[in-house]
Length: 373
Ligand code: SF4
Image (cartoon, rainbow, N blue to C red):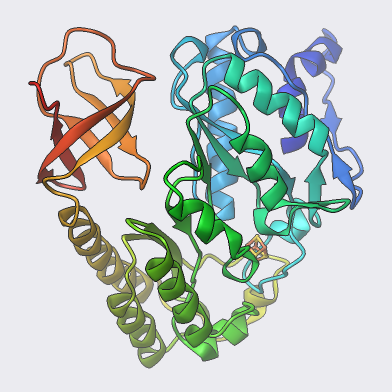
């Protein structure tokens, strides 16, 4: 059975269609450039079979890896839910020269507003505390007069929901009002932006057909950083795009050094048949991509530590998410710091929003301690 991403939540219906003679079933609905709806299935009944659940998560991860965007999946099963994604958009019209998404997933289309409202209400009823708005290019969301801001406004009215996060957003599509929302302590939109840069070289950005220059990206990052207190800023960056010389790579490295970013996800360029970049002659050797990638990853590790250091000694709310068999409990602050509880705790803290003192750096996390503990 071959089914598209949009159909995956209906997998059990399609399973019923497969007959005993092992007929191949290919489900490829025609993609129209309009709106779409997604099934709203209570998480407790959607995938009762654990095996199916695992398979679905694998598919989701593959899709996200192909997107080179940030993944925020629901981390646990229904009775332990803390945060989950709400897909509002799919496909893309931007046609970056390295990207297969506009061909593989089609052009940009948007989830019907009433349908996403229905799912959001259901998620909150099921105890979800944090909704992560996802899509391939969420900043372009448009149904009638409604935009991404209307989605955020609606989620902000939901009683019981504690946090709204936007997964990843193209730098040229960020509505300015989101800075205000993030700066308002009463607003549920958390201080977090993941703005893909891809390259710090204008020559490469043009070859990629990205819609901004390095200077424009820089301005946006600083504007966000100066407008929103405690903001966590992350990015995606690509190394080894065809014809990326050492000089152009250094432009990326130097720009990343200067910007107030907390982390970056680094991807080596991977040629996708059917994209303009696939045909570009001067491909960068794999060893060079690897070396450039390592340099950027090292820088990202340092930057995250610098970002974390700013919050040591503060008290910050953590949405506790995971509890390992060895008793390790961890979760995230609103501004995406992973906190590991530095003490043994007997009761299950999952899905509770509780403040801790941020005590000490540990790798890419911070160790936290309850004030009374
Ligand atoms: S914005 Fe560019 S990289 Fe992102 S999905 Fe669209 S075409 Fe691909």
